Length: 213
Image 1 (cartoon, rainbow, N blue to C red):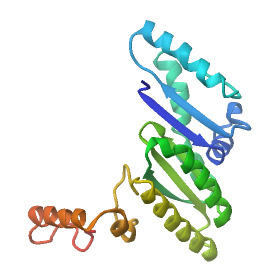
Image 2 (tube, helix red, strand yellow; image 1 turned 180 degrees about the horizontal axis):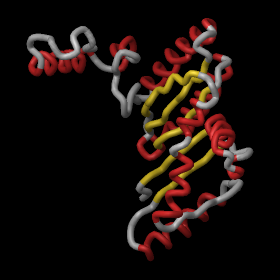
Image 3 (cartoon, rainbow, N blue to C red; image 1 turned 90 degrees about the vertical axis):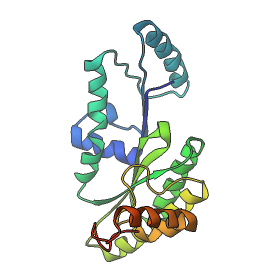
Image 4 (cartoon, rainbow, N blue to C red; image 1 turned 45 degrees about the vertical axis):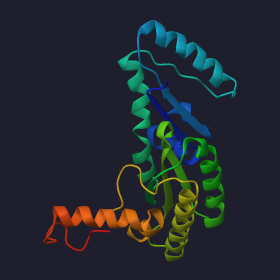
C-alpha cells in the first residue's frame, strides 16, 4: 500500500520543465510519484515489485529515492507544479475535484477532450491516491471570450464529476467561487442540514454574513 500517490499531466510537466529547468521533465507526458513507508527490508522488497510494474509501461525514466534526502529531491519538484503554472502568465482556475479512483483514467481522458472543445489549456495534477485531482483551466483574464469558454468548461467539468459520484471540492471547500454549483452537488436534505448547523452555531447571522451557501 503506497503512503502517497501523485500524478501529473503533460501541460503541468512542460510548465515545470520550463520553470525549474529540470532536464528530466523534457518530453514527459505524464508523471507518477509513489511513496512507500515501513521497515527498510519491507520497503526494499516492495520497491522491487513496484519497479517491475512501472517498467512494463515503458517509462522514460524511473527514479528511486531511499531516505529523506533522496525523497525530498522528488517531492521538491512536485511542490513546484503550482508555481510553474502561475509562471506561464495565465490565470489558473484551480478546481480541487474528486472522483472515484476507478475513474481517474476517465477523468484525464475527459479533460483532454474538454481542452480541445474549450480551446483552453487544462493542467491536471494531484493526489491520485484518494482521487483528488487539481484541474486547472488556464486562461487570459483579459480575453472575454476565453473567460466565457472557461466558465462553460467548469460547468461541463462539474457536471461530469457529479455524474461519476464524485465531489466538486476535495480540499478547499465551496466558498464563493463554487457557490452556484452547490445545489447541483448536494441534495436538498444536505443543504438543509448545513443550514441547521449554521443556525445553531450562528443564530444571529453575524459570522461572515451573506456568505453562507
